[in-house]
Image (cartoon, rainbow, N blue to C red; front, side, top):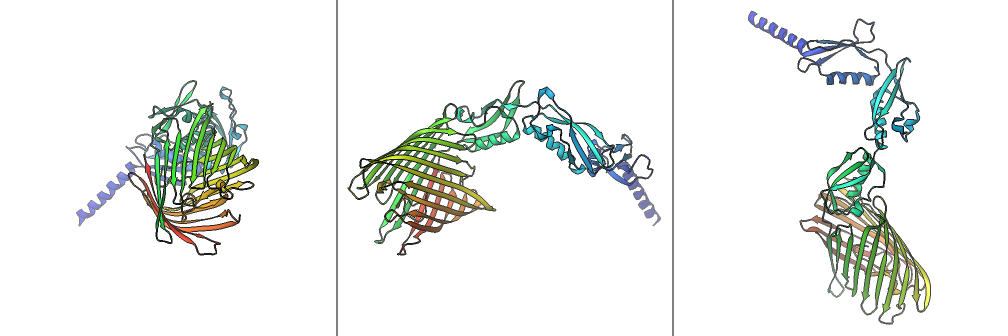
Length: 549
């Protein structure tokens, strides 16, 4: 029993010795005249001494509490187990004043450079210093450094800090160098930033976003800056990405006689195949109402004077035994910084009637069309919809039966994919069109109906000169390769014969799957006319397969 008691005492004594040698006691004194400490901190040693990082952490914590002029009374030594810190006065307010800084003759365009003092508190002081440095960095001074000159502790509870900012020479992006894509579209990349753009994180992030909006490019590494004595080079790391796609759609339904009606189209887009950022669109459509449409579009950006490109299109529509329309558009485009684009086009259209029907006459139209567009890009292959916008206006002169009259048109489209909850999104698509003219002809009308305008109706089955249509989809994504959706479309159009508004709507469901070959979508919708005297409805299954290559 005695031996056991001795053993316990020995163990406790050993632990006490270990605690004394393994830890450092830090005594906190309110001032230099005090003998008794107000608090004690026990700090574990690293390799028989406390590290400078541990000591700095304690100083910062005390600093944030307001002890700005504390003094470390004892210098740490290897075998020292005690340390004294004199706290001195407690400050609740800090006034920050910037000294005059005319380094290299540069005066920063900042409210901070006007020497207006700023009040802060000790717990937010370090963040304020970081904000000052960030302010200079954002103004194009990547090497700016905030230096503390001196403190003034003469006031009782308010300390004054005098600081200056060194190395404030501004840098700008003088050249963009692309690595990883030797034949990159130089005409597009070099116009993504303006001349003399300041080098800062905001502009670099903006450039990265603009690169991501180009469907045919993929970033493989974050941009890097190379600083030379007289210039700054920004390296971006890209690779070419296949952005071509071919889109097919099959719609089928049965009529009153039980006959199966099939209609469909082929829509192909070829993008950047010649490394010029060009885009070529081709569409062929054959609807079950004996209407055939062929459309070709070509756009090449930044061919003239760095930002001016060319646009052209050809459209041929033939409605069997009624008429044939041919339209041609050619013009110039201007690419703004970012994703905004504007166009000014010459428009020509001619129509030939084939059956001597009432309100179907030969005519020729000439005019000018302007467009303003915005479009982004998403890395999600299954749901690539991002914010897109188009506003178009046109003014024309039409020659009809040897008489000339004026016309104007308005077009508007808007699309976005809105995040709602986790895995839940809302997609909205708005399309509107108006053609204002005297003696409106049947062969001047636009056709709506189908997956691009309003689902639940046959492709191009409704003729009108004015409409506003809204498509909505609520999508639930199981993963990035499969989603299901509920759809609800609605809108109003002007009925041609009586020129009265006609309302229509549809509802249904569908799904989308991303496969190795492309994207498969199936949507089943029931369409109805709201004000129809008869309960006319149609259920259409829209099967769409987009091949990515």
